[in-house]
Image 1 (tube, rainbow, N blue to C red):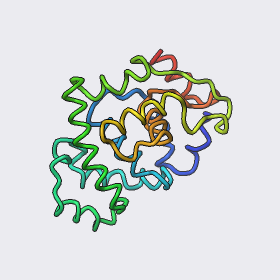
Image 2: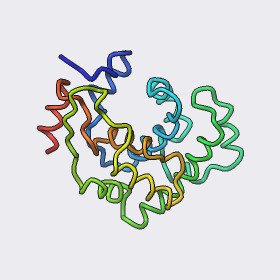
Image 3: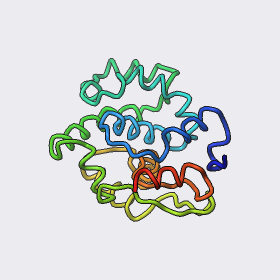
Image 4: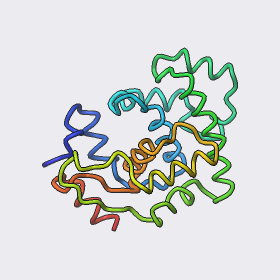
Length: 190
């Protein structure tokens, strides 16, 4: 079966591609996880983050936003000393402040899901890219999302990070048209 070219580099990337990438996510915990992981990826490869994902889940209390929002300086220090995650001070602190902003959005909208999916009118936007080189790094929608998140106090949510988040959580289907997952996702989530 043909797959997106980026998924062929390692078994972990293939599993992620085949099972998760582009599948619509409506669970707030998982949306928070992707928000933090995509921010952590900035300047790094997704493979690096994927290989650290289990460690992230362990040290970030399985991405329980309420727990992460309460992290103090001692906990931040422990995270920065943990080689199982990306030990970037700005990214770790952003995860904590993003948890607080995330909870505010949940309070305002009832769920983060209700907030985030409004940017695509509540349904997956199916693209038809023939080649991976055709896929944009950002779009007008990711620009709008980025701007809105930043106004709400989120960090590490630039337009490119937001677009990667949208791809990961199935807000957009960016599997190339020759990839077996493109048709599967389109058929199931149209």
